[in-house]
Image (cartoon, rainbow, N blue to C red; front, top):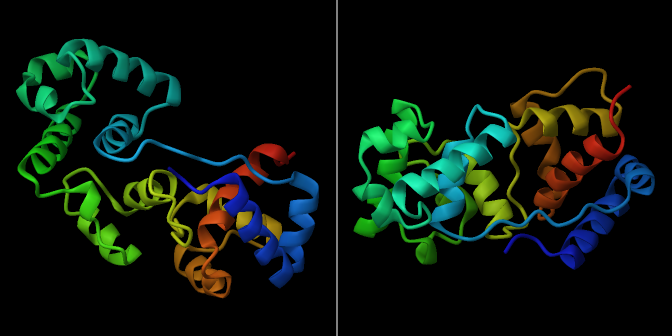
Length: 206
């Protein structure tokens, strides 16, 4: 479901009122469009498929995986597919293992998307127990698919670069530094991340 356009505007207006440099960046780049993904299994599987490959390559692999499994949005079909079929679709051995781990967790009820903890850190901890889902993937899922407004993907390189640029910092802040810096932006840090990605596209360096 993601964060709605209205909620994004409200959060960014609140951030702009607190931080003049965000206000200036917002005036130049404008408001971002919502970043919305489907809630549940398919979005997390797409995250695994897309790891360390281009968007175009990920789309091609997904299409082949759909054909090989008869519908990879269904965890039962992924669980039933052979390793050879999934390797033939373009998944590495490691990603085949990750895809199976996710499908098994959903089918067994170990991972229930309707019962993720309400606390963001607890939800992240729950998701990263699944092989192949790291903190960044968990944060992006909670932000784009669940619309949790205060999720802050501080490990994202683009967020680090662009927040540093917006604030006029001399160098890119580290993950630790940007976590500390953004404490003052609670409970609107998700909107800050979405704006950072938007600002990077709207006003590219050079």
